[in-house]
Length: 161
Image 1 (cartoon, helix red, strand yellow):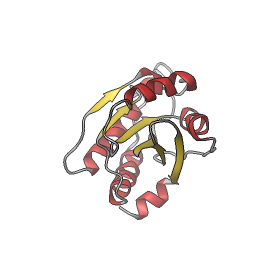
Image 2 (cartoon, rainbow, N blue to C red; image 1 turned 180 degrees about the vertical axis):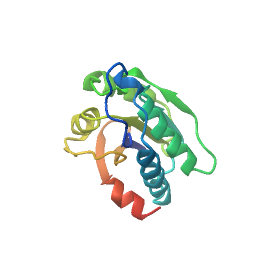
Image 3 (cartoon, rainbow, N blue to C red; image 1 turned 90 degrees about the vertical axis):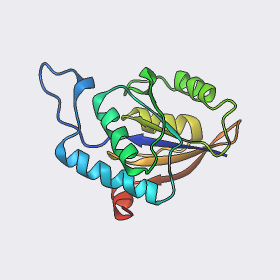
């Protein structure tokens, strides 16, 4: 069964006049806490075989933290549909196309934003989850249906790092 790790980005700088939302980076605290949370995720046995991130800076930096937590790394990509206002039906179609003919042991990490993470989880599994920054939901895919696996808050993940 394929595993999907749906991860919300870490703590980012507050919006600033003249700086596009897409360019807001993680704060120093965001880097520290996100690194610890991603290390905890890997320590729990969730090691991505590949990952796709929103192109927004804070999501890409969260992906860097996840990559740092693994020994061997993994291929990464970016998809515009993972932005905060991404559309659920389009995201599901894209995700299904990404999972065609992949190894059943694939672990695909997706790094995105709110409200997208909560809405996609509900859309795919029927389960509503409130995502804190650097939280992760585990979703399984059997080739037909998506099922809810688990949800980890950042503090739970940091406790395992």
